[in-house]
Image (cartoon, rainbow, N blue to C red; front, side, top):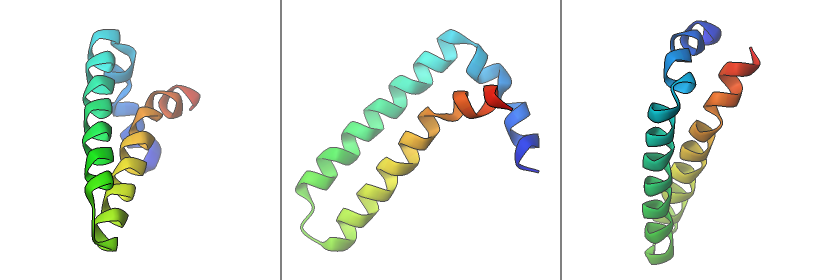
Length: 69
């Protein structure tokens, strides 16, 4: 089932303009989470920001995952 979803995203990752815009959006959101992480005073906030950064970074590797299948 996982591969079914990946095959539907081929158009996004193979369109250079769309992929570049998507990566720019991911980079912006990663920067925002870094700021949130720096300002966090509660351990829960730190963990949430760390988790968000991990997920956003994994999305940046989506192109590699799709093209490797």
